[in-house]
Image (tube, rainbow, N blue to C red):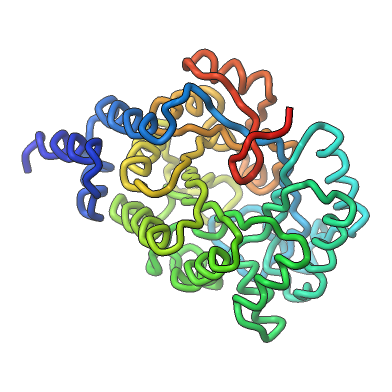
Length: 358
């Protein structure tokens, strides 16, 4: 196969031609890194011609670590009788949110495991308590697997469950639990979690009732380049139908303390290539987020020239990736410096990408 093919693909993708699964996989496998950067950067500026990079001040709150899914890639979950298993009380969650608000934060990313004993009524009560106390906080919380789990426990449809969550205060839905949207891969790494179609069903139903969502991709475990390409096109296809995704966030698998800890980790090169290809493929998703949480500050800075226009959250608290041994930390001033060194001005946003109040 000619070495010129990836270059020709890059040129046509930069001009706006849609990539197929096979073409996206070929770019992931064969394209030159710097040529990919140039193409993705050009597309990024077509979406966002301004010299701004956005971020949100947020906190990740894990209301429980008890989970029946037992995903092989996860180091955070615990059995109900584990000595360090927990469920946060409402008062503790409220305290954590208050600390966020006092620090100027606007977004709560609250997620937990698939706890066999927690009901839809329980999580709706928790959301309602937060909303009553903090009416202006964005509750960007839960995930499709959690929604599916609560729906099953309540004997309700996904749509009915999402309506109940929205009425209780849910603002938007993060893209957690996607991993790789290829069922063969999911069967190998998370067989007890919702299927590809179920994940997409939750997202489509959320968009249908006015909940905006993000989409994620965790890669670098048992997936291939073609699997990553298929994942991207599934997101693109649903976005064509609903327009409900605000952003795409790819991040690399962290293996330490997991059942897959023998997996060879992917480095910055593979991460940046994947990020750039996602910017080319997802021609209908407005924002691509860099992952300093898994890559560190300098790779995240490079990502701003590989298609990313957003640096994500400051993450006052993060537990899941940290459980796998990845403990990068960053503050607003460091984010500001990273953006400036890359030629951008840092701008604080809300969850929906509207500007945060000064």
